[in-house]
Image (cartoon, rainbow, N blue to C red; front, side, top):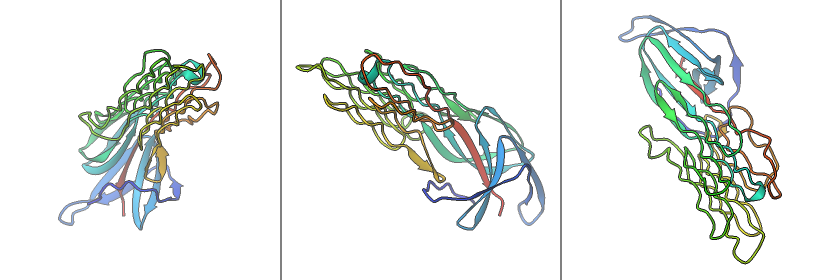
Length: 270
């Protein structure tokens, strides 16, 4: 029986278009055909897996019962549209686990990336849901999400949003966003970092924006980092689940979207 592993080990992949394998109980042969997403094989410590990676929504279809491991990554949240004072977007929630799939089709929904000040879109597999990252705050609108968005910089400082993925019915990974700095006694202020699947976002100060929380390494790749306040880099490649950064300066427009999510399914083939 295959067991789920979250590991930082690097693996090499070999792309294939279709696979038919042999599985069964008590020695009888059962032909399994599985389709959906981009298919390829990997080797993890001598164990062979077939992978189905969904970078956009589709169906995972199997011809007979199989035990599959899954990774669901939601889309990240958009940073607050207020330059350095805006909070970073929260990373999309992550859920990992194992599911017995009977013959049939299972929907894989991939959450799209979003513009500034917008909550991320959920991703799901067979109804198991990763929650979209919270939007970074623009004024008083910090949002909770898979990981929470960073707080806005203002008098008194605004708290970051709550990461609600771990307390959801599906469990998983997500953390709180950092607080925005207080503007009391100074005109310099910076937003908090968005929470990441691997840790909370840092608080903003009167001299530097809060760093986004780290992403989580699952099956050799990092997903769902939080966005950093006061950072002009576009940190959101497709299917990363990353929350977006808020840019430098006051009132600067954010021109990039957050990272979209991804759904990955794998099962042993040898």
